[in-house]
Image 1 (tube, rainbow, N blue to C red):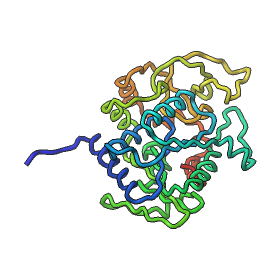
Image 2 (image 1 turned 60 degrees about the horizontal axis):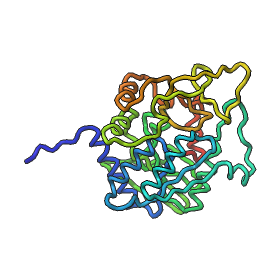
Image 3 (image 1 turned 120 degrees about the horizontal axis):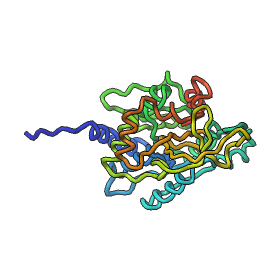
Image 4 (image 1 turned 90 degrees about the vertical axis):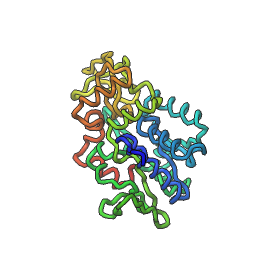
Amino acid sequence: MSDYKLNYLEQLEAESIYIMREIAAQFEKPALLFSGGKDSITLVHLAKKAFDPMKIPFPFVHIDTGHNFPEALQFRDYFAESLGAELIVRKVEDTIKAKNLTEPKGKFASRNWLQTHTLLDTIEEFQFDACIGGARRDEEKARAKERFFSVRDEFGQWDPKLQRPELWNIYNGRINKGENVRVFPISNWTELDVWNYIKKENIQLPSIYFAHDRDVIEYDGQLIAVSDFIQIDENDQIQNRKVRYRTVGDMTCTAAVESAAETLDQVVNEITASRISERGETRIDDKVTEAAMEDRKKGGYF
């Protein structure tokens, strides 16, 4: 008998591919949430492997807040087109106008809370019964409570007490009419796992993940990109710094990190040495309250 063993990245890959195939088998209209960020790009790569030589059997969906980094949007469009994938984009700004929602004010006004409305409307519009996302348990403590198949009620709300056991890799996708499931195939991955996998598979990423020169302001020890979406005060000093991004959210709520890492090897070394999670270091919106992420999830956020 041959001594067949998988290393830890191959084990993670195999688990995620298995979950991708379970999604296709158990749900009628799944969709993959694709923002052009590293985690959703990794999901797409896994989906390609899961269904090759077929096309990926579900559309890509992006809920566009209007505050995205241009590099991420350009890559989103390029990547979807290169795969021949259907890309569905729905804009938070349209929802704000249609529902007469009150937009947050302030120096770093974020539309993250409002995108829940757009996401739920999009799920209803296309009758999606499963949405695939790149959330990982190491990102934030509220994420650590997630199952692979995370059930949401007819209002899109998440209740940790109603989640189902997942024993022996058995996933229960049965839902009632109006409910949907958020599926997280890379839940067991860490940020470092994602980067090591990207390096191993030579996956293409937006340039924003590597060191580049950018105009920023320093606020509470964080470097925020200068853009039309934030308020520049007379006390703000605009500086040109060499930075990169560990995670790509909105320009209003995602901080850069000072870095000279221009290659995958250098990024991996940098992440290996870090003792702070990517969201803990760079996401302003997660610091609004102690339970900011959990509150958003209970309201229908991804």
